[in-house]
Amino acid sequence: MHASNVEQAGVIGELEAQVEQFARVIDQLVARNEVLTAEVVELRRRLGLNSRNSSKPPSSDGVRKPPPRSMREPSTRKPGKQPGAVGKTLTRVPDPDEVMEYRPPRCRGCHADLAGAPVVDVDRRQVVDLPPIRPVVIEHRMMSCECACGTVTKAGAPQGVSAAVQYGPGAAAVAVYLLVAQHVPFARVVRIMADLLGLLVSPGWVNNCLARAAAALTAFRDRLRAGLAAADLVHFDETGVRVGGRLWWVHVACTALLTSYHLDERRGQEAMQRHGILPDMSAPQVAVHDGWMSYFKAPYDRIEHALCNAHHLRELAGWAETGDTNRAWAQPFIDLLRQGNRLVTKAKADGRTHLPDTTYTRLLKRWQQAIDNAEAAIAPPAKGRGDRLALVDRLKATTEIWRFARDFTVPFDNNQAERDIRMIKLHNKISGAWRKPANATRWLQVREYISTITKNGLDTLTALRDAITGNAWLPPLPE
Image (tube, rainbow, N blue to C red; front, top):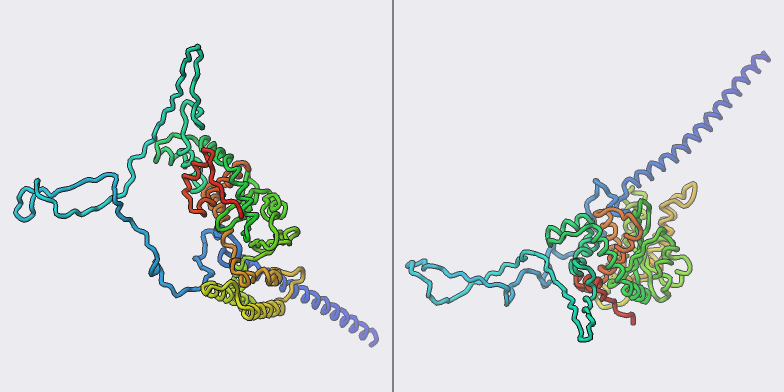
């Protein structure tokens, strides 16, 4: 009997040990399942990210590119031309280059000859067309004259005329315009020059034109940097590009009238220092940018900052699309930013320079409440802060996010920089990557010139020709 009890107790002990082991395994599986479930949710969220709901560029959307969806709210305006807006259409010129007259040969009534009949009315119709395009060859003859003393003196050649036969600055300006302003690859520039202009050029000649134009813009770049460093508000952004098979970064600093590009191997503060715009700024100047932390590090903390709220809206919309739980904390931020933008737009139309203090205070109070609700609703991950709480942490930069509501010279977003940087991505998409940093730098130097003269309403081809002939346009000196 005693042996039987001992045996039974042993069996029970083994069963209890197995139960404890199975319980531990179950706990491990439950924990593992929670981790995998969270990973699946995160992977699904990442798969759903696109240019509409994140900071990913449109070029990354691929063949499943979503339909365009503006972050702007619908307006009450009808599509198309607005009442009172100035229209653009072809109008007749008073002095046409060529006039061709047509007389009716016979009367359509009695069929009499109308050769000598008086003209009682004229119906004028004008056709605007291009004449056949052919190069114009100008020959420069430098005469040699013999003096009575027997010395022969030869006249000097005009500036820029250095070869027996060469293409002039007008042809070079067109080549650079196609290459930089219209993002046409070298081989296609050669083809266009031959087909449209009758100029048989080579890719090497086109590249030489680019180098000449870039070298002629030294004074322009100095004036450009001085203007940006003195501006009240400057937009900043950066984007990755492929140069020589490696990842490089193009930095942009710009205003509504100025554009400066800088190519660098790095994205962060070292590159910003080498660009030389941000280090020269100080309060009360304002730098508008995204939430990249390099912009906030010393010595850049001595200037005022404004964050791009288009970035915030895209990120918040991305989280709101992942389910009701995330929508509950993300949507209040979206609604507040849109409401603030509407209030600022209306106040600007009314001639105000900032929102009333009571309105601004009420918005900030609701913003802080949204932050508190989000932190309470988001469960912290096992390690780190996680993407959601990291976004909420960035949204705590209340002064920088809502600066547009206190100072109407500060925009709601950083679209100015994004528009200027988009031209770089467009060029890479059309023409491919640059092979050498030197080529990329030259292209960017000419591109910032074209962008700036376009913003100032100048003719691009004329400005390029002036630059190639050593008379580049210079931005006005900062006051």
